[in-house]
Each structure stands twice: as C-alpha cells, then as structure tokens.
Image 1 (cartoon, rainbow, N blue to C red):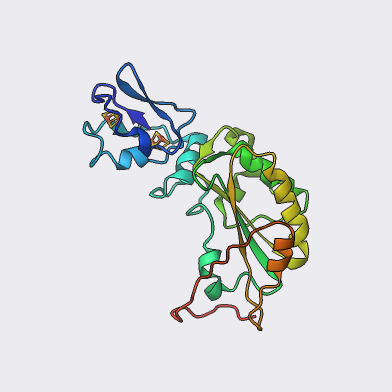
Image 2 (cartoon, protein in one colour):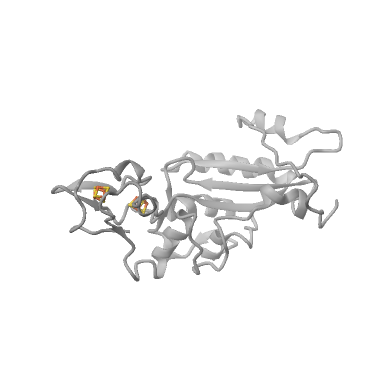
Length: 242
Ligand code: SF4
Ligand code: SF4
C-alpha cells in the first residue's frame, strides 16, 4: 500500500484503522512502514468514507513476487495466484457435517497464527510448523500455507517467504485421537517461544452418547475448552457417512 504524499493532509484519521501500526505522521504527512505493512487493504477500503483526500493507492507491481503472500493472507477481499488455493484455510470447521472429512476417532486441528489482533510473520509460523513436522504431521493439502512449504514432511517454509508478514496464517492438519497429547504438548512448548499469539481450533465429532471424551483430557493438560458448534439445517446431504 502507498500514500500519495501530494494528496495527504496529515490529518491522521487513517492511523487507528491499521492493524500493523504501520502508519505514522512524518513531517505532517502520513507514511507507511513497508516492512510492517500486512497489505491488508483496510486503509484503502476506508478511503471513500474516511480518508478525506483519497490518498491511498496500490502501486502497480507491488504484489508480484513473495510480497503477494502478505495481501493474500491479510486481505479478505483478495483472491491471488500465489498458492492457487482460495482463502486462508479450508472450511472444514464450518462444513464437516456435510463433507464428513473429519470422522470419528480423528481430530481436525487449525492453528490460527497471529489471531487475535497481533498478526504474524512466516518466521513465527515456521516455528510451529517445523516443530509439528517432528511428529510426522501431514499438513492439509487444501490449505494455502501448505503450498508455501519447501519440505512438507519437515514443515519448513520456502526461504524466500520468511520475511513476509500477515494478519494471520492458518496451519491445518488432521490427527488420530491417539496423537492428541503429543501434538498439544508440542503446541504448548512452541507457544512459549513465539513473538505472537495464536488461536487453537479443534474439530471433533460428538460421540453417539453425546459426549466429547477429548475435553477432560485437554482440561487436564491445562487447555480451557470453549465449545462451539455449527448446526446443519438439513440443506446439505452428507457425502460420507461414518
Ligand atoms: S486519512 Fe488520508 S489524508 Fe489523513 S493522514 Fe491518512 S492518508 Fe493522509
Ligand atoms: S494495508 Fe493494512 S497494514 Fe498496510 S498500511 Fe494499510 S491498514 Fe496498515
């Protein structure tokens, strides 16, 4: 993102809308710290109603190369060609009752790096993916982050993307219930080494008797479980029934 210095009045209205704190006023003009900028587009989208000078613009060519990953992982209005995969993750947590991909005995896991609020860098993401790689995790094929790995078995990110930053990046994979404890232990260990935050999502199907047996195990490990559910209104037909 860029600010037209000729148009900018230095009013500062745009500053609180930037999640990366990348906009500052220098010599009575707003400037963007390009290294900090996530390319989320917030400032651009508010220009019609907020920026009185319509000073924001996207410089042609800025999103070619690895910087495109910032925009792709940060701007929900963008569909980009870097990974060839739409969105920041799959929609399993929302549609599993229809697709049936996470079956009984399995847990679908999504680690939303940078959420809430702080954002993340690929360097931070790789701390988590490479640690999970030691457990033989098979990262989700349909997740765009997986396509930025140079070694999916080790969970390492392509070196050229390591300096990129974004609002969030979602690490997705599925595991058998038997692997939950070692995976959670690795996640907790990495959490102590991160410079950002993350949200941990776990997808698990209720047992026939309505119980969720993984919950007490997680609570014993110090994980406070906040249950959420998605309700199928019957408009979708399950593809897989198990
Ligand atoms: S809102 Fe527009 S005019 Fe005001 S400081 Fe930001 S870019 Fe400049
Ligand atoms: S694109 Fe997003 S991160 Fe970059 S300056 Fe604008 S609001 Fe801030």
